Image 1 (cartoon, rainbow, N blue to C red):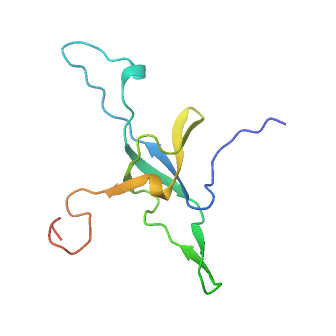
Image 2 (image 1 turned 30 degrees about the horizontal axis):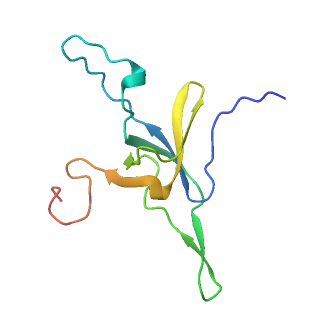
Length: 118
């Protein structure tokens, strides 16, 4: 049976991201082939798993929530995760620990520290 895959639901503490395409830069008229370009470390969170389950010492099971949410722009580890394609679109499935940080612009931080225009 040949079924077409439409979506991937991450399991556990895994996160599905889509790398952002870098603008193609041509310097001095030289075109750099795709095979020689470095992949972008910037990505957008597409879907989240159920979260990491941690066994506490008091025998209670604890669910650790994600620090990212769907739609966040994130910086991911260069070699972390597994890359695959669905309908010609490239995705990366990685653990939350492979996410290095959340990217934000002016005033998007919301931390109240005053550094970002809050």
